[in-house]
Length: 153
Length: 416
Image (cartoon, rainbow over all chains, first blue to last red; front, side):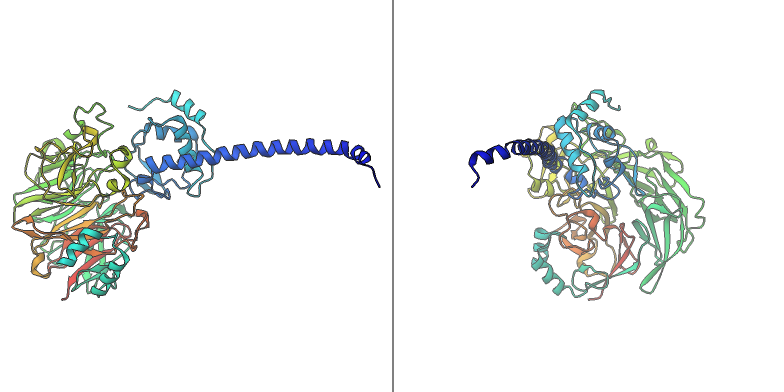
């Protein structure tokens, strides 16, 4: 029979190593999980902002309204340059826009009364919905754009 | 009548409960081949299809068709079609501009871009003589993209009327201090011009009526000798004032209004909206309203009102003899259908009949033709297969309806 002491002696070092490895990977998982949950939260909050501020014009599926309100499905505006996209929310939009050969004429009013976080969340939601797949927008990015944003007269 | 009233009040075109719809289909045996649900005794057929974005339409006394396209197709913004049996074939096209308005009167075909009114002389068969040489009646009409379509109608005294839509939902971006909407000087109203005078500018016209957010459907009522227009009501009551209006209220409100206009009338946009359920002019929330306060009584009262966001794009007073007597001198309204009702189901997408007596709306409106969208409960407007837009009456009293999604033209006749 092997004594308890011997077992202890034999497994002590590997056991510590195992704990260290586990702890390390646990930290990694935890970190990964934290980012993921942050994204999920932003998307969930963004959906609420979308429902309240965007849905009636751009529709629940982001398909927009023919000739009037542009779609948000895989367009260069939605998937492209983040500062440009952030500025559209802040300043509104009243330019000729052609998407897939169709023009859209309705004026979008400025939404600059929304907080940095709300704008970040709703854009993150849009960039992760309607078959879109693009990186998240952060409140810090919105803050930078807002600070340098010059409204068109 | 009882059934019609019930239909019109509870269901309104699209949100018809399945049971009612199935009953309706049972009653209305003529749902094919155009796929529409019609009042008993009527039949519909699609006489032309895939024409482009067909907007307003004219049928000549010779039974030929002129239809305006929202966007010129192959350099042709006006199509001319001959009817042959139950089909209409494109005979020619002209006018290198998109637009909505088209009207035939006094030996000229009038057609609009989103900036201008042109006219073409026609021969004694109402065929355009020189399609490549239009005369410009008015140019430089205000167009800032939103609500840019220019609909037209002529009176019996040589005047032409055109809407210049407000390039805004509710003017808030132009009137932050609420001192008065500044764009009303050149938009959000009806302008009157001489129909036979060339090269007029907007400033040369009479600013005939103000405070109309956007008019697409309009017609001249021959009994009253008066202009009638359909206004597209404001959007986004709930989005902008979530504490004052629920999502459902915002879907139903405000009314789409019919106005009978006289020179100088002010319908009150953006200061008010009309509640079709309480029949009251309400003070707009941007201008001190709280959802309960009524508006200043000085503004024009609508003569009829319809549920929110139905989007009336066509208006036609029926003067033909083919349909039963009750339709004579009443109004058909083509509702393009809603988008601002989301997240609630969309509605509209139908042709409504509004009975008239002695030149005024009389009695409840009813859904005359339904099923254009192809869906019983439409979520997104882009899912609609067809959307009604323009209306015209043929020489035999048939009713023509355009669809601007695919470019179908429906012909509706009465067979008893």
